[in-house]
Amino acid sequence: MNERQSQIKSLVQSLSRVADADPSFEERLFDSGILDSFGLPDLVAALESRFGLRIPDADLLPANFASIQAIDAYIGRARKDA
Amino acid sequence: MAFIKGFGAYLPERVVPNSEIAALVGCDPQWIGEASGISGRRFAQADETVSAMGASAARDCLARCSVEASQIGLFIFASGSAERRFPSPGVEMLHRLGVTGAPVIDLPMASAGSLFGLGLASQLADAYGEVLVVAAEKMSSVVLQEPLDRNTVILFGDGAGAALVSSSAGLASIGAPILHSDGAFAADLQLGLAGPMGMNGPVVVLQSSRKIPGAIREALDAAGVNARDVDAFLMHQANRNLIVRVARALDVPAEKFYCNIDRYGNTSSASMFIAAAEWSQSAGFRPGQPVLFAAFGAGFHWGALVATGV
Image (tube, rainbow over all chains, first blue to last red; front, side):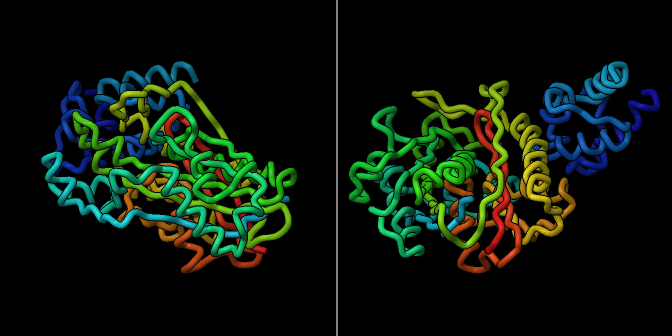
């Protein structure tokens, strides 16, 4: 994982209710139980703070935060659009 | 200018603990509490309708305000779980109240119906004088349909609430209502004519945790009030975890949000008025102190308004 992906993984781990969660790059965070429904808005807030983003309502879709891979791709697109 | 004169509520007698729901869907009762903050809810009797529950809440509200049903110029009835398409439950409630001739507007809206009704009443009070807003839900008839979905069965309860709005006087003046709707997510929280209810939990949580604080900020800005100066937040009781996150987003203590979801579950559109009816008996409006109402529900519909004690 590159630095951004490692940062995302660290945020996910800090918000997970699973002890010693170690999600892989492609692992589905919600389906695997690493994050629950209410972990998602917490993750969005953490991503906005860490990466200096304001994620618009229209992008608040579970698919954009489904895995470290999906989050990394979303942040890449969001920064390109900014 | 419109005023809130008072609130009323009705809760069915039967208390349904988490253990009963857990046995239905095969889960740990403790998980229900952790996922929602709910420890019990009320379920209506089989023959109890939303109009009957609404009439009970209306009577409670009218009695608390010392107003007769015959003095009401307009009724507004919100429900997302009415038993039939037409006639509407509002007109049946009027019949139960012994009212003939006064108009009733039905809002077929779950969860946000009470807030939209309150906002509409504040705008219509000048024309109709006394406006009684009622919200009633029989969510047990929705979530107990087979096949059971444990993500919805655990959340919902039955009940009704009411608020009396007046053009002349009351306990609090109502500020500009902030009301929003967006159909882009209609499929993510819906109940078809034949059921069952469908809820895409992650979408609902993501959208509500952003949209509710946004609407609250709009309402506070319109009223010139800082979030930290709000006396109490009376919000739709959707999920305790959501209420905590809304408080966090606004940087106010969660204790400022009146919460009774532990006892009644999510009673959809009725929940905000049920909470207000309880809050008004234990605390209530204080002169000059702002109180914030907010809700979010299927549609999506969401909004907020400030009422200031007089």
